[in-house]
Amino acid sequence: EREELLESLDFVFQIDFYNADLSSNQKKWDEAFEQLYLFKQKHGHCEVPAVYDENPELGGWVRAQRSKHNNGTLAENRLER
Image (cartoon, rainbow, N blue to C red; front, top):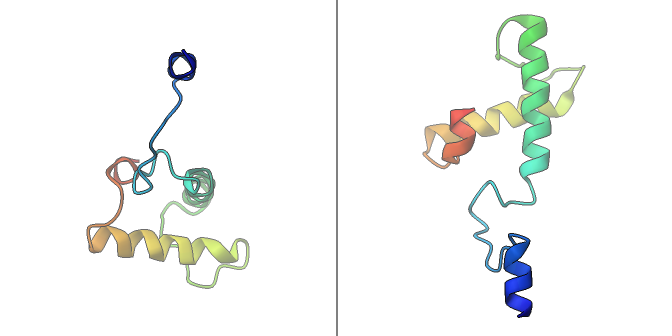
């Protein structure tokens, strides 16, 4: 009965830590994506400089996403965004 109660809440019993949707880093990724979106709205492109004074972490995040894309490790749901 306890299992049924948990299932009624869509409780996840086993977490695939490689699934970006369930990752604890998803919120952080979404926030960085939002910052990239705002950068594009302001500058008209996504070519964030490695040293970007307004958001020093954004350039590194963009570089990491490109690296993951190039070596095939960027999660599909993130690639679609």
